[in-house]
Amino acid sequence: MSAIPETPAPPPTEADLLQQLPEDERQRIQDRWRIYQLRHHPSWWRRLLLFLSLIGPGILVMIADNDAGGVITYAQTGAMYGIGFFIPFLLLMIPVAYIVQEMTVRLGSVTHRGHAEMIWGRYGAFWGVFSLLDLIVANILTLVTEFIGIRVGMSIFSVSPFLSVPVAWIFVASIMIFLHYSTWERLALWIAAGNIIFVPLAIAAHPDWSQVVAAIGNWHIPAGAALGAFTYVILANLGTTIAPWMLFFEQSSVVDKGLTIHDIPSGQADTAIGSLSMGVIAIAIVVLTGTLVYGHAGAANFDIQAILHILRQSSLGSIGTALFALGLVEAGLIAAIVITASTSWAVGEALKLPRSLNLKPQRALPFYLSGILSAAMAAMVVLIPHIPLGFLNLTVQVIASIFMPAAMLFLLMLLNDRDIMGNYINRPWQNWSAFAIVGFLILANGLYGYTIVFPSA
Image (tube, rainbow, N blue to C red):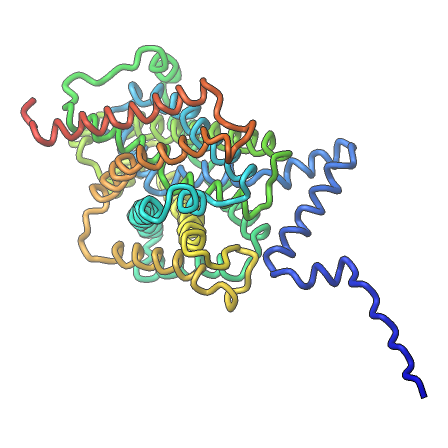
């Protein structure tokens, strides 16, 4: 008897092929399919949904840039120097932040690779290790300032730091491990929205708005300002406006979100909205403390606890001070969420680990642990008794500005590499703007170093 031929198996369906892919790739394909459907239905409602689906990384990176360390730095800046030089300076920081971060949007959308992966792949292990260590050290130091903000903010409500700091760390770790990227991003955006609280608080301080407007045109430096201290505060404000973690975060976030070259305009708009929001909120904090705290005896030495004490005794009162404290906690929390993710992405890219917030923890535990453990180290530093919180915060921002030129140079080399970027390389004006930023960072760092070596100059 002849054997009955077997019926050939039916070809695999698209659903079967999709199930064979890794989980993070499946999630990304589903997200891209949703974007494709929205893009090819021209109704205004779908276009709005498309824009809302594409935004996120730019707003997150910029609002997180107004982190607890940033809020404390801006508050100290207003307390020390009032409404003057730093109002126009912070206005200038809006286009500076946009120019820097927009490059990461193009780089991530064109290459579909994170920042650490690009450096390792293009420039080799030596520079890859250099950039990764640079980032990890800067991130741990910056996370220290985030937990400082959470500790100080919650102390207004008589919450022990041994409760507030660990609970914040557990929250950051939990949402990173258990939420998919899209849910994680939306939750982070809702938390970031709390940053806006500083704007009504600045209005409630009843500043002299004519003085604020006048400051924009005269760049007034208070008489008798010590060069070393003044340069130190400039560097701190620079360090909280542009920092290495921002480059790594936004590019990796663009990749994990699955943006393509078609999404670059939306990514640019996202970054522009974030830059403007960052600048407005930063100026609001300087206006607030410049109005209510500047001029008090010993203002130049105020730490954040002293500033909060002055605010409570001012027209802002207990309720306004409590809202400021909540804003400080929110700023620390959103930044801790974002910076922890940037560490995990960078380590995962460098070590070629499975790396996506769409992955379950059992498949990508080393990826998650790299960021979570760095946050734990920072949290433990903040729990050290009698640690000088104000000095530590400003110092971290200065260190971030010192690390930034090297990170910027890697970014510029990648953005001018036609083999990588094709027609999306930097235009001449973008290069000149970026080199001017790097030059100013180097000049400010050099000037501060000079005042350290020659304090009597």
